Length: 126
Image 1 (cartoon, rainbow, N blue to C red):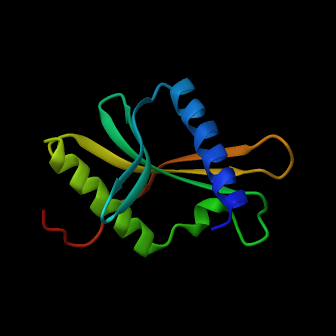
Image 2 (cartoon, rainbow, N blue to C red):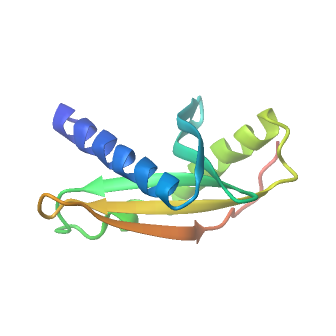
Protein backbone atom coordinates (compact mmCIF):
# COMPACT_ATOMS: atom_id res chain seq x y z
CA UNK A 1 0.00 0.00 0.00
CA UNK A 2 1.41 3.37 -0.97
CA UNK A 3 2.08 6.19 1.47
CA UNK A 4 -0.66 8.21 -0.28
CA UNK A 5 -3.18 5.38 0.26
CA UNK A 6 -2.21 5.08 3.93
CA UNK A 7 -2.70 8.83 4.36
CA UNK A 8 -6.12 8.65 2.67
CA UNK A 9 -7.13 5.75 4.93
CA UNK A 10 -6.05 7.58 8.10
CA UNK A 11 -7.86 10.71 6.91
CA UNK A 12 -11.03 8.64 6.44
CA UNK A 13 -10.70 7.16 9.92
CA UNK A 14 -10.28 10.64 11.44
CA UNK A 15 -13.41 11.94 9.69
CA UNK A 16 -15.29 8.81 10.74
CA UNK A 17 -14.27 9.13 14.40
CA UNK A 18 -15.60 12.70 14.43
CA UNK A 19 -18.86 11.64 12.78
CA UNK A 20 -19.33 8.81 15.26
CA UNK A 21 -18.67 11.03 18.28
CA UNK A 22 -21.10 13.67 16.93
CA UNK A 23 -23.67 10.88 16.51
CA UNK A 24 -23.38 9.84 20.17
CA UNK A 25 -20.91 6.97 19.88
CA UNK A 26 -18.18 6.68 22.50
CA UNK A 27 -14.86 5.61 20.99
CA UNK A 28 -13.29 2.76 22.97
CA UNK A 29 -10.28 1.98 20.76
CA UNK A 30 -8.88 2.75 17.36
CA UNK A 31 -6.77 0.42 15.24
CA UNK A 32 -7.17 -2.59 17.53
CA UNK A 33 -4.68 -5.19 16.29
CA UNK A 34 -4.16 -8.85 17.04
CA UNK A 35 -2.36 -11.63 15.22
CA UNK A 36 -5.70 -12.37 13.51
CA UNK A 37 -6.21 -8.90 12.08
CA UNK A 38 -7.30 -5.36 12.85
CA UNK A 39 -10.49 -3.47 13.58
CA UNK A 40 -10.42 0.20 12.64
CA UNK A 41 -12.68 1.52 15.40
CA UNK A 42 -14.35 -0.07 18.40
CA UNK A 43 -17.04 2.13 19.96
CA UNK A 44 -20.16 1.93 22.06
CA UNK A 45 -23.52 3.11 20.80
CA UNK A 46 -25.72 3.21 23.88
CA UNK A 47 -25.55 -0.37 25.23
CA UNK A 48 -24.09 -1.95 22.08
CA UNK A 49 -20.42 -2.49 21.27
CA UNK A 50 -19.77 -1.61 17.64
CA UNK A 51 -16.93 -2.96 15.57
CA UNK A 52 -16.48 -0.48 12.75
CA UNK A 53 -14.67 -1.04 9.47
CA UNK A 54 -13.81 2.17 7.60
CA UNK A 55 -13.26 2.08 3.85
CA UNK A 56 -12.03 5.22 2.14
CA UNK A 57 -11.67 5.83 -1.57
CA UNK A 58 -11.05 8.83 -3.79
CA UNK A 59 -13.11 7.43 -6.65
CA UNK A 60 -16.15 5.21 -7.15
CA UNK A 61 -14.68 3.87 -10.36
CA UNK A 62 -14.45 0.35 -8.94
CA UNK A 63 -17.58 0.60 -6.79
CA UNK A 64 -18.41 2.09 -3.44
CA UNK A 65 -15.88 1.74 -0.63
CA UNK A 66 -18.28 -0.37 1.43
CA UNK A 67 -18.48 -2.92 -1.40
CA UNK A 68 -14.80 -3.73 -0.86
CA UNK A 69 -15.52 -5.69 2.34
CA UNK A 70 -15.47 -9.30 1.24
CA UNK A 71 -16.92 -12.26 3.12
CA UNK A 72 -13.39 -13.30 4.11
CA UNK A 73 -12.74 -9.78 5.49
CA UNK A 74 -16.01 -10.00 7.43
CA UNK A 75 -14.94 -13.33 8.94
CA UNK A 76 -11.57 -11.88 9.92
CA UNK A 77 -13.21 -8.87 11.59
CA UNK A 78 -15.62 -11.24 13.37
CA UNK A 79 -12.76 -13.31 14.78
CA UNK A 80 -10.92 -10.24 16.03
CA UNK A 81 -14.15 -8.90 17.56
CA UNK A 82 -14.79 -12.17 19.40
CA UNK A 83 -11.24 -12.06 20.73
CA UNK A 84 -11.78 -8.51 21.98
CA UNK A 85 -15.05 -9.44 23.70
CA UNK A 86 -13.50 -12.49 25.33
CA UNK A 87 -10.35 -10.64 26.41
CA UNK A 88 -12.46 -7.94 28.09
CA UNK A 89 -15.05 -10.38 29.52
CA UNK A 90 -17.81 -8.76 27.44
CA UNK A 91 -19.29 -11.80 25.69
CA UNK A 92 -22.66 -11.08 27.30
CA UNK A 93 -22.90 -7.58 25.75
CA UNK A 94 -24.81 -6.73 22.59
CA UNK A 95 -22.50 -6.21 19.63
CA UNK A 96 -22.79 -5.33 15.98
CA UNK A 97 -20.66 -4.70 12.91
CA UNK A 98 -20.90 -1.30 11.26
CA UNK A 99 -19.24 -0.13 8.07
CA UNK A 100 -18.40 3.45 7.19
CA UNK A 101 -17.88 4.32 3.55
CA UNK A 102 -15.88 7.51 2.97
CA UNK A 103 -15.72 8.77 -0.61
CA UNK A 104 -13.66 11.82 -1.56
CA UNK A 105 -15.01 12.81 -4.98
CA UNK A 106 -14.12 16.47 -4.44
CA UNK A 107 -12.73 18.20 -1.36
CA UNK A 108 -15.53 17.28 1.05
CA UNK A 109 -16.01 13.61 1.94
CA UNK A 110 -19.27 11.79 1.36
CA UNK A 111 -19.77 9.60 4.43
CA UNK A 112 -22.20 6.72 4.70
CA UNK A 113 -22.63 4.92 8.03
CA UNK A 114 -24.11 1.46 7.59
CA UNK A 115 -25.25 0.10 10.94
CA UNK A 116 -25.43 -3.67 11.31
CA UNK A 117 -23.73 -4.04 7.91
CA UNK A 118 -23.09 -7.75 8.39
CA UNK A 119 -23.61 -10.46 10.97
CA UNK A 120 -21.36 -12.96 12.63
CA UNK A 121 -21.48 -16.01 10.41
CA UNK A 122 -20.04 -19.47 10.64
CA UNK A 123 -18.89 -21.46 13.62
CA UNK A 124 -16.33 -19.92 15.93
CA UNK A 125 -14.68 -21.50 18.93
CA UNK A 126 -13.24 -19.23 21.56
